[in-house]
Length: 184
Image 1 (cartoon, rainbow, N blue to C red):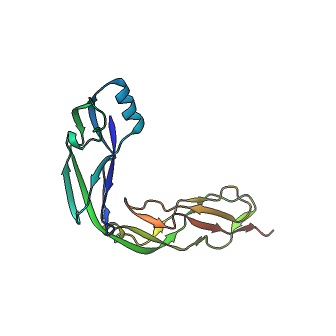
Image 2 (cartoon, one colour):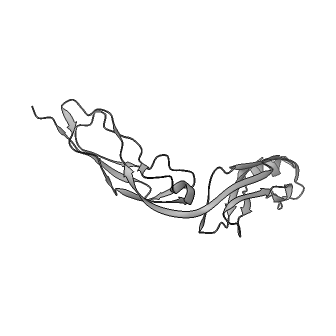
Image 3 (tube, rainbow, N blue to C red):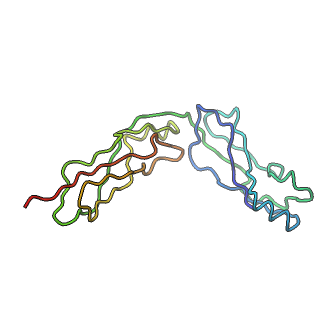
């Protein structure tokens, strides 16, 4: 069985930084009904991060951590893994960063791009681990394609390649690529 890992009670001033296992796996013994019920409900393995500070946090997992208390007669045969959760925790920070628009493709025959592509808004508020944010100078957006377009393109683009645990506000940007017919 796989138990999705849910980290709870991390202080609002902190952020996870780096990889976190998504699942904890264990071999269980119980009736077929119990195992089906457990698979259908997908109980989460909750780990509290209350009181944890910046730096490295390591916690061993045991069979007692698994959320199977309410199923009488079910037992854990073996905790497959991971047996230890190793997390990096950093201060949470915010930065307003300009966006970079990337336009690719070729407009329809007889149409060309007039002026630079515009983003609205032209900057995003990015929140995440301080160390990750300190390495950013801008936020690249997903590529906007103008293949075969005959008139101005308006499309939504999301940030691309933000570091783990970083989010942007707003989550998407309206991109306008001005196109016009080529004069004859």
